[in-house]
Image (tube, rainbow, N blue to C red; front, side):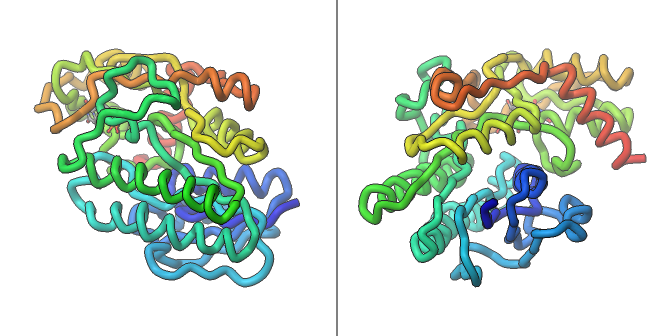
Length: 311
Ligand code: UDP
């Protein structure tokens, strides 16, 4: 049994991670300032043995009393819609927040785990993306606030690893989806499902031929825990290698929900990557992990969540 700090513990991935850690018998201290997270995501965890929640902005000094075995830094707004709305907070939680959480891990002799992102590859010129690819990022565009914060966070993590000998993990997370995404998150999966269920037009940005590789949350969390439990201190892509166009995603959502919502096209956001697909050879060989949930199956499960939420 371990005592684990999860920042962003009330967020989409953070809350699933807290639940999975409790399920395997770990103690969890969840930190969140609820800027994009929600208490509703962790409501059922409050009664569970070993769960503590602290309302805290990790961009400010972080302290957790008692022993800590691992610090999992999942706090960060992560939707392109957030990049426009709260850019400074994103830079702060990726920069100052990562530094504070590394400081906590160092003080406790704990493992530090960074939730990094496929966005470190920017608009990739190498396809699919292996961890060895350095990326193609526009530092001053609207996505730069997230991409560069996470690139800085990776650099800071590796500096603590090399300079202070901290045990570290870096997960590069590719588009993940499932229950507890925000209904107004602005992502393709949540937007399309909310639009289809509500009978409103499905908003495809651009021509819909851009691709993403969507990973169902249960697969994602299983991969993250496999990485945590491994000794791999270099970045690992944790994502589903099955690549789909945004147009295909919209059609699956329409089919699964039985909705007759029309598809409308809206302008493509600036620097929206035309292609994204993880090379997961490292995860397969080092962690013995790969996703098993097909997109249609995961969308069915996520549709059930949003139907309940919007009822
Ligand atoms: N997208 C879309 N309609 C929406 C929301 C997103 O067509 O209502 C597109 C977006 O332009 C991108 C893809 O879907 O090409 C995935 O977007 P998302 O925000 O889910 O994640 P991203 O990979 O861009 O961070």
